[in-house]
Image (cartoon, rainbow over all chains, first blue to last red; front, side):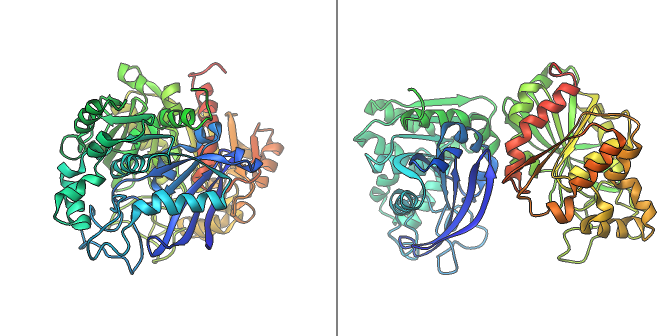
Length: 284
Length: 284
């Protein structure tokens, strides 16, 4: 597997890098970003937090806007940020002007319907191909955690719930909690998974949490001034499902915070500590 | 003076805002960004750090990439980020593809030559009009500090040196230290100020520091892996001039750091503390 380094900058004593590779799962070239904390220089494998970004993002938004490197450097966590969809001229796309389907809107699932099924397999990419690549080419252990924002919060929750044993902890900022029952999710699922709504449930955190085979440390932060809260995000659906299933969920509501990266930056350190405890980098 | 609020997000308990106004100095509409720390809610005036960005930037780069709000919230500092040039259809611009002249490349000076002189008066805007506006419309005192990056580092140094009494402290990341003797500076000065090189000296920090009427706390950080270090930035010229003038200058060279915002983010907290001491927000 060829890896091409696109950029490499010193950041808080560690390395902020961007790489490109050919993804066999997605059938296209993909970019991803990696932050290697200073402890990575010693060569012993470090745990990895995978971050999944939201609609319209790439692998770079979190890297540039969240300010996570400072605390990742203190805790000795590797941060890995994949892109939000397959990319390239060969990849199906939505009509111009639609930003909630197709490019930058892969929803971290495996599509079954044409024209999406041939490339849109972000679940397998995020859960399997990318960790294999990271653990083979970087000083990364198989201690994994996963987090994300909005569509990427949905992705973090669903990926962790679908793949017991692969992650030690999960968190999300303003996740789409019940995509079967919100406009963004319904549109994406209809295109990617077809009209049979029973097949959507395998990609909905508020359904999956009721069938969960493990209990991971789970932290969600939600701003109360988030313009998408009532219409798209629906955290109350996840809270009800988690409660019914006896799944411990810490969901914190923050007055005044909106859906932006200013909200994420304000609270990212607490998520990093949440994951560091589960990953063995802090006393729990 | 009409101020139009473009955005407003809670960030580390304070407000990250973006505003638009009609600048009389520049003869165009301008955007600027303001971070109001949580202490601003009490209404008592707080000191202000003015941040000047580099080539190709706007008022938003620092806001999104530097991660300065966390520590500004702790220290009670207001952060104000102007744009890097006049803007709009009426403003002269360089030919397509030139990014080191014209839009986003105002060099924080007052141009004397056509077609630039009618709008390119960023020095007067940054040193006079913008602080007057900030101090009239926000809970901001006249305790001011100034900092910046690259072209904006040049701007911070020159603005402070030209205007004794207006700032309590100055700092810069990877500033253009001697624009009379580097390609970026020579190109800009020739267009904005004309062919008479004797007129350039009034906008060159390595000249002005020899004539300085006050001694401000002055901190400069420079990465040694910065691709522009030898050709454009020339800190050794400023060090020599400061030494000859007996101006105390702390210039720190950091192995491995490049010209990017990852370098700025890694060290911004130390600059905020440098300014907070001079502004009376920390014991000095």
